Structures are given as C-alpha cells and as structure tokens.
Image (cartoon, rainbow, N blue to C red):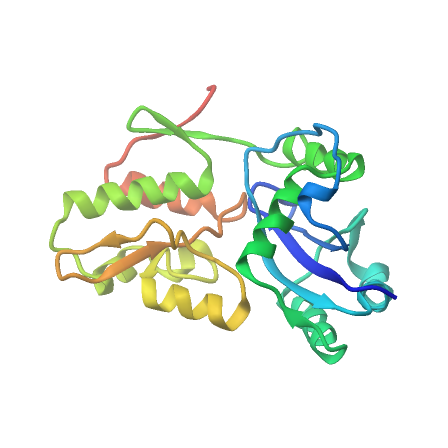
Length: 248
C-alpha cells in the first residue's frame, strides 16, 4: 500500500478566463523533490502554494475516493479541478477520516517546488490559462509594471504613505468589500492570519504587512481577477492615482 502525501496546490496566476476562479491541483507523491526528475517545463510567473498536504498510509486509495467524487462535476484537466471551499473541506475531511496527518512546512515547500517543475500535462494547462485563455493584462503604476494583486498592494501602500494618519476603519470605508467581492481590500494582519488558521489558505499578502501610524499592521487581499480588478482601478483613479494598462 505504501505511505505518501496527498496535497492541494494552487497558483494565483492561473485563473479561468470566464469566471476569474482559480483551479486547484489535487495530487499525490511518495517521494521528495531530490528523488524525482522533471523536464524544464514552462516556468510560470506565479508561485505555487500548498493549500494543505496530508501524509497517509493509503494515499492512493484516498486519491481514488476523492477523484471519484470530484471528477464528474469539477474536473478541468489532468489533476486540476475547479472547486470551491465546500469541496476543499470535503477533501481535507476525507484525508482526516483516513488517518492522514498534516505535514510540516518543509514538506509543503517540497510539494510546491515539485509542482513548479510540473509534468507536460500540467504545463499545457498552465500555458492555456496564461496565454490567450485567461486575462494576463498587466498595469503600470508609478513607472513600474504589476500584475493584478501586486498592483492593488502598490496602490494601497502609496495611499497609506500619502495619508499617514489613516486608520483601518477609514480604509474599510474607502475600499469596501463590494470592490473585491468577498474581502475588504485591506484588513488587519490578525484577521488575515485567522483566515489562514480556519481555511489553511492564504488570501492576503501576509508577508507584506503595512504598519499604520497607530501601530496596527494591515495587509492587502490577494484575491483579484478579471471580475473585480476594474472596480479597484476605478476607485484608485477616483483617488487621483494614475494606472495605465501595459502595452497599450
């Protein structure tokens, strides 16, 4: 039967061009990165991140059970699935029910590297999502070029810099949930970490906190796609910030 790891990974740069949703890769591995060989593949601009990974004695059986449930409705290509939080919770519950143990951060990093150097089938899907099948528009702000999430981060950082005494409450009013759709554009670092603890998924630039004048640390959400980025750009322009589309 053998012991191995079942994992879910994602890449914020890979999104469905119609819905703006990002698919998730559900995979298994019984080795470490150093034990495997990969072709060069296509190097994507985004970074793969591990949503969660479980070590199981019967990891192949767990994968089979999960795929039998998800494949008819949510399959995109290969090991990629267009799933929501409900399905993600289902996968995690199956892992737990089958005796899975959450793996260490070190193993998660190996999974991410392993996925970064993915096989040919994954490369084809990534290429489709990142060249023509999905929106790869970039933007110019203050002389630098950004993707969607980094653009929002740069604008928010600039606004806080220009309004040194601004509070989180004022930022919430300025950038309400209606702009992003599910999250405040800016939230407290504490709340963002709470989301990670509850869902095992990062939805904010946690490694890029911004310190307000009152000492509070805030973070910007990473959840941006073709369905909501224009709302933020329109708001930023209302505030006097110049944002241009790259290549236009």
